[in-house]
Image 1 (cartoon, helix red, strand yellow):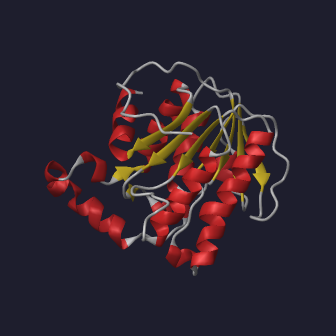
Image 2 (cartoon, helix red, strand yellow):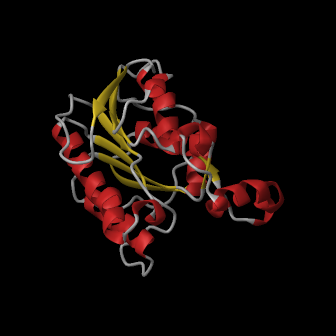
Amino acid sequence: MRPQSGPMPATRRRTTTPHRFVLAGASGLVGRALARQLAADPECQALNLLLRRPTPALEALPHARAIAWGGDDLPPLPEVDAALCALGTTLRSAGSQAAFRAVDFDAVLAYARAAQAAGARRFGVVSALGADARSPVFYNRIKGEMEQALAALGFAVLVIARPSLLLGDRSALGQPARLGEQLAQAAAPWLTWMTPRRLRPIKADTVARGMLVALAQARPGLRVVESDELHSLAEAG
């Protein structure tokens, strides 16, 4: 599957909205934003959340149903129209390259296959700026390999979001603040004018909105959405 070339013109009208969703990674910055935005969408009839631990704030969302997933074998998934994936960790949190790959590649692929078996024809995933299967940088290489493996599964619509540095309130998730994000957030007002939009830090809510708009536009095949286009889609959507 080859990525479509060039960004689509921004549009304020979604063409098609899947009604039944499954989401993995809802406890992270982008995942939480995706869950909240889907729950607020009147066309969302079901929101299945794969959760490693009870999360009352997410489980209380409209149409939400929690599905426990300990990280090993996936439980059976209900029938869905679309799947979203915001799974991811950091090398520091994972503790080793093997542990990092187990989350950012193995778990993502296992989830994608399970979602496909449950009927999902559309799949959206959070990757990263600079993802490249040939990169000498381990993090970027694993993200690129994950993208290639997803493309080979043959979803009717595959949206890959490549955000720049994520901004958001990690303390609300019980996560420690990351120094790089704190510095970027503090410097953003001074550096925005001289930083290409593709490289600017981006809010998790913006990434989620851009992903959902791209997924709803239903362009067949693979669509890679870089950080600058995520901004444009979110503003238009």
